[in-house]
Amino acid sequence: MSRALVAATALAASLAMLPAERAAAVCWTNGVWFNGRAFEHVDVCSVGPHLTLKPPRTIGRTVDLSGRHIVPAFGEAHNHNIPGPDLPGTIRRYLEQGIFYVMVQGNSPAARDEIAARVNTPRSVNVVFANGLFTAPGGHPSALVERNIARGGMTDADRDGGFLHPVSSTDGVDRAWWTAVVPQHPDFIKVVLVYSEDRVAGVPRPASDRHGLDPTLVPYLVKLAHRHHLRVSAHVESAYDFDVAVKAGVDLIAHMPGFWPDPVRLAAKGPGIYKVSDASARLAADRHIAVVTTIGESLHALAPAAAGDDAAHTGLAALKPQLMDVYRHNLEVLATHGVRLAIGSDQFRSTSIAEALEIARAGLMPAASLLKALSSDAAVVIQPKGGPYGLVEGAQADFLALDGDPLQDFSAITRISLRVKGGEELRLPPEGRP
Image (cartoon, rainbow, N blue to C red):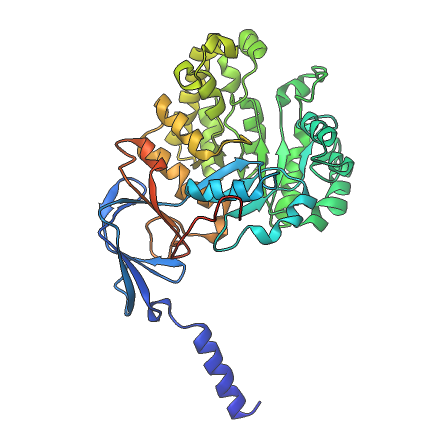
């Protein structure tokens, strides 16, 4: 190689690796920033798409935040509404609510491919997709798939190899893996456990789709996914499901046990079927397994004033003391052992904002912990390789300016006056356009 070519190559490499501080910074002044525990007055700048807490060499411009409360952008750690019938409206609603990161925990791979250019861009939401769910033949959510096929929203291909991977053996797992999962390039893997203690006890499977994987398949699936550098998220319903998932080494629990209460089981066995044990919470923390909430719908149904109806009409009124005891216990035991919590709604027509507001109204989490679970912790769960997040050096310059202090009035999370994504002020797309 000639000396001239060597010099040119070295120059190109040095230009590509210029320190971030040499670029012109945007300095965001007079803001009160959330640090994960409280708000503090601090000087923060952004250089390109990252925050810096160090004095920059060159300041391109300064933005006065006028004393507003600044929080990391929000996340939605469990939903299924992308792809969907109104993608532009869904994207706009997320951005309007300050939600920049979305974890789609089950979707049609074909539909995902069709919208690839509309997400994961600087002016849209960042989304990760599970693609098809591993469940038992006829297991949850087969009924949903059949309804969508009947309505024209899915095709026959979604029954096996599309939205669902129904398996009953390791051979079935291998077949699904190599014929569907690998070619479809999911961002993570989703497995479905539904009262797996019944399967272990030999209880006949119900006529409905409310059952899931043989729990002995979960460790095999987790090892297979991890060999391919894919995280595993587990749908769970009971505390036993939670134990199975944690012992198998999943990376994420997609629901808090009891999120979808079964009145018959509660009457027969009591709330203990949904209570996470200290031992399981401790193991989850040791293995860095995060948990997504998804209890907002149940909390909404248990609150007559919020629901605008008598709670007796929801069928959950008699269960309220037991369920509130379950939710309070689970959130406390997970927090005690340091398990990361992320806010997710699993509601097609709602978002993590409504989920967080319901948890706040119920007084189930301290405001600072809830805000962290909605923002930086949700972001870590959704995009662990995209961080860091929050008020730390080099974090993503994705933040919101609130007109109010959410630690004093949590509803301030809905009063957003400035959205910044990748260091740039984000303008909402017009209605009806992405």
